[in-house]
Length: 478
Ligand code: GLA
Image (cartoon, rainbow, N blue to C red; front, side):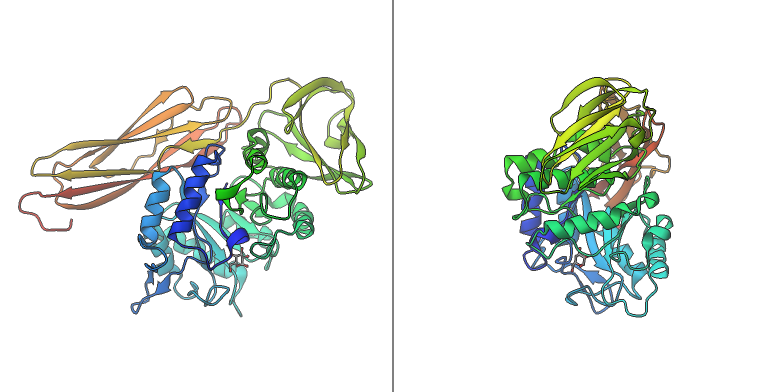
């Protein structure tokens, strides 16, 4: 989950000021609280290659440099998403691509502290998709930072057949819209193409039908709600693409519907699919959730209201079942219903439902942090102990067990974890004894097991910076 600039802005307006405004809006609007995490520039990143071949920030567009922008994002408790291209140049040809520079470029992204890199497929004549993205995967590993690898070949090379071993998500189709021009019918074609690939999706390897167009001019409230329901049901990456600085209350309500997000972020990671058509209405199911309940979507693409009966056998259950049904948009539970349920759905609208044997509908872990960067500064001659804490909570229904910090921290750093209900505080303590003046950095990684499904959640990591100055008799750098 996160935000990317392309759908609304295209290339030209992207700069540090815009990105920071969007980051602030992401926090103040409640999107961060709902789980949106990854944010950063798309093409518009404006880096160039210096005379030595190293990727370098454009300080006119990003005065703090790309590392500075990343620090700003991390301090807000968000993760940093960056962009590049697998070919010789980016799509507009304005920026260098990674071809023949894969290892240096991925090292540059790690230095800028990227957590996510989208790698486009323009200007790649003669390149093999699988080989190229594997090389980029190897380069990311060599760079030594955990980074989400987002493949963007628009379905070229059929990445759903091979990319699970080299990346975390792959675009399945062309662009969902031209910048600033949301296009409902194009989005529906993309959803239809992506639906067919449901077998390829699973935890850590997702079909990506492109960034969302919710909240852009040209979409009605109903279309926004239906679009979000489809993306949640397809377990698609939820990258918002609208201008977060000017959202209507209804757009915010759609994008932050925690019950819908809960089925998208479900730890089993199953992509739903169309199981039956009733005229122009589609019944989507096949999406079992972590608590054993089933997500069901009825989507009416017709011009008139549709009355649709969802029989339990449609969703793979026995007709004799008695199930409670939760409507994820009205937030009401009804039932138990024996045999099935009937719904009336307006044109372009949806019924997004969850059917369960019990009338409890738990939300899986949705992780929100107050910061992903601890900055410590020690000045003076004597050894010091400095601490900095980050607090991570889940907005899911259940508390998480204690995060377990992975071994392998540098000797100057220790981390203690304390739990208070759904919140946990990771306190980093740096001890400067024996350290020379200089800059020190560590990535703290922690693991957890989601209690109901038993699936690992290993996304928690953050940076610790330590600056030591003024020690007697040392050189400037460690
Ligand atoms: C391609 C991608 C888009 C965007 C542009 C940038 O078209 O599919 O999402 O990144 O490139 O030029």
